[in-house]
Each structure stands twice: as C-alpha cells, then as structure tokens.
Image (cartoon, rainbow, N blue to C red; front, side, top):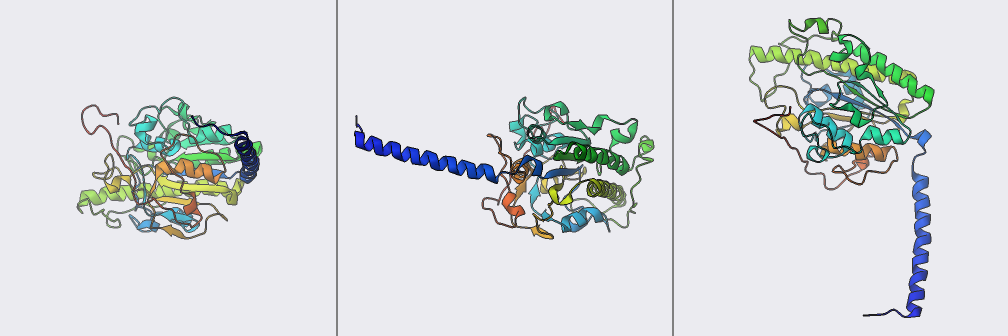
Length: 371
C-alpha cells in the first residue's frame, strides 16, 4: 500500500481548496449567465397535422401561393431543409417533441401514455414559472404533459373538436396571450391544427363540420403539384386539390395566431417554432420510415437573436432535439436523461459537428396495431 506524506497531503488539500474556490467562482458566473425568470423568452410552437415537408411555398410549394404566412415566418428566421421526425405517427411524434426521448424510451410507441414521471417541456417550464397552454389537436392522455391551460376541452359544438377553424384558434390564442400578460408570466403555447389531415374539406357525411371553416383559397386539380411518388391521374389531382386547400387553411391559422401575438405580446421576446408531425396521409408518406414520412418543414423565428432569411442545408435535425434546444434558448438546465441534443448553436449561425445522420423508427407494421 502506498501512503502519502503529511507534506504531500497538505499540498493536496491546498490544491483541493483552490479548486473548490474556483468552482464556486465558476458556478457564480454560470448562475449570473442564466436568464432571469422575468426576462425568459416566450415560446409558441405551431404543429401542422400530416403536412409534407415540401408543401410550404418556401420549400417548393404543393400549389401556387399556398402558404404566404408560413413563408413570411421563414423569411424572418431560419428554416432547416434536413429536419426529420423520429416516428411518423401523430401521437408518438408529438410525444418525442415534448420529451426529448425517442418513442421507445418515453413509452409512447403508438397511442399509449408516456412513462409516468417522464419530464416534459410544459412540465419543466411550468415549474419555472411559465404559463403553458395548448390549443387544438390533443395528445393522448394529456394529463401527463401538465398543461396549465387546455383549450382542447373548452368551447362548445364541433368548432373546437374538429380543430380547423382559424377564427377559433385566434380567439383562444388571444385569450391565452392576454392571460399571460395580466399574470406577467412567460408562456409556452402549443397550437396544433387538424389541417391538412384528412378529411380535408369534408365529404357528404361530415360536411356540416366544415361549413364555417372555409379556407382563404380553394384549389383546382389543375393547379396543384402531384408528388413524384404518386401517379398523376385525375383522382390523385382531386385529392391533392383538397390537400392544398386544407394546407392553405392551416396557413390562415398561422396568420391568426401570429396576429394576436403581435397585438398582445413582445414579438422580439418570443421564439416561434413551426413544423409538421410527419408527412401527408397518402401512401408512402406516413406510418413508415421513408423520407416523405419523416422529413418535416422546420422553421424557427426569434427576432434579434436569429438572423433573417437563414437556410440551413448542411445539418440534420431531429424533433427529439427540440426540447433541449428550447430549454437552452430560455436558459434552463436539461433533464438528466435525454436522447436529443441541442442545436442552439445553429440558431446563431454557427456550425455543429455530428449532424450527418438522424434516427427514425416505426413499430407494429402488422397484427395488433396501436395506431
């Protein structure tokens, strides 16, 4: 056994003491660098339902002038041309966004609950003084996500259940923004449209649900683009016309929410995120791992923090990275267990190594299907 002399021991403890003092000094610096609660930025996350990555005009456009407001949002911030979801099914995809964990690690491989006790973005933000609200399409078992305000279950009739009326989103967003302003709280709002999920405009059996949810533009079959993975035949063009009309109504919803944000809140202090949960609900673009299923139109605006008109074509981003990125943006520590990795440096125009691959998955392709 090797022993240490008293002289060596004294030298050792002097070193430890100096290290401890330096650590305290560093810790004080880190704490000082954290964002004060009252100055933390707000977050608005708008999630499209079954929108293909190249549907917005700024990414190619499925039809003429299809998303003028989403395009404007992209011009005011950064868009990522290689962003992907982890799993191309609605509920598990959104669960990945809000937990920073892959679906097999958070428990929601299909329409299941996430594991009890799993940290979520709204739960973490709520504990730090944020007002957290959700509008529109619900996540299954929403209680586990800890929303302070849930507009999914408020309102009457079909207007909220179907989640396609831009004016309903406007009304609820206005209420939420005013609530946060009166309470003097930073906020996180997740607005989830049902557009452009089928049924786009409503068939004979459900047309009454869409009577007051008209899009600002109706597309003709001759106007639309047919994706290369679908046959260019009349029935497909008719389908795509309905899809484009539905996507335009989603854009109307985006305009409604951002308009109310501008009226009641500090735009410069608000991070706005737009993306889709996965590709469109047609063959080869949903419930699989093909690129048309997993690629998503990710756009982020944060005035005075993110330069305008940025396009990232180099780095691959996964939606599992959203939680750590947003927590870093608002100056909060990350949960111990995460699959995601913050891409915050990319928002500042920097480069980041290790972003040349992403992981996608899909479960239960036959037999008992949880979707």
